[in-house]
Length: 154
Image 1: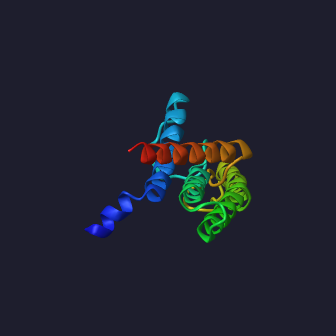
Image 2: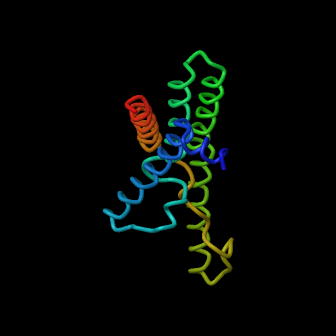
Image 3: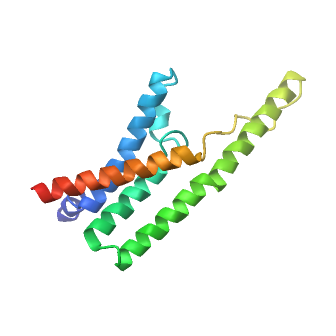
């Protein structure tokens, strides 16, 4: 039980989780306003803001605040953040673009009476655009700083 209490009261942990929740919540609100609300978006990838970027930026920011920018922990957290953000902007985004093209090809094949390429449409919202990444980074930094302020005020 002490392990769980130590974890949930750790500002690095809760600022990381809160950054993810905030980004996912903002994403759901944005999509609801646009008439595209779906509970699946709570755990889905892609969209504005990037929850992946918010999560790793919240982690890196809180580690830097807690341990200092020159610490090994900060270097590890920043390296992880860079890898995740690069992946979201590059590889995962490209995968989403390829899924769109394959889904369109499958749709055209079906219109011509042929079998589609896949049984189910492929997920197209995989990666992020640069504005989605930047918004996620902003969410992560702000949430981590607010969590730290809450910690020092008590």
